[in-house]
Image (tube, rainbow, N blue to C red):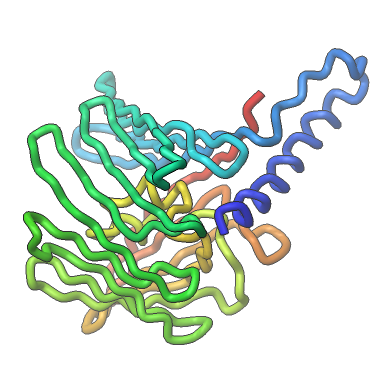
Length: 276
């Protein structure tokens, strides 16, 4: 499944490479340095306006062979203040274990099966806190995530795949339940990466790196609309579409509408760059 996704992204990168070569077709071919098609960098960025000034946030993922994420960092900038956090990744193939560690010493460990799906994870903080995560699947789709603290269930997220166009996500956090109804695009189109805004929902947001490393499968349907049960607030998404059944968006805009109030919008931008 991870391989399928990354083959699709490989094709997109090869298109970028072809364009690079075409721009230099008047030069001697021996002078052209072509990027390695098996290495790429994904940058996800967002610019927000706040009382403290303009906030620029980005996540940067580096991939090798389009199968393994090799490193990642997040960066926030407000005026002259910059906060950056680097992550390193260790692959223990003999024990099917992936470990992500940030520069503060926090770590996330995942155990996966022979198909590359993760069934168990553990978080260790520098302050001594430990959290355990268990994952279940419906076919190739993530169906449930359970978070335990001191062996006690703290939060859960459960996907119910109703049909090709509708999914229900039920989250329970500290005993409080919310039900989110998700509608997919009218055409069956797959996104090359998870929906950015969906992975902000707790406890899904605790697994951000694993999501972008394909540890929970890579079948990401393009989401058209989301609405919480019992709420009049509707969230819609727009993308720049590409031909075919897979999109690698340049952007995704989230629009939240509530009654007659002015809609609230956020846009994240995606840049996939072949690495020389």
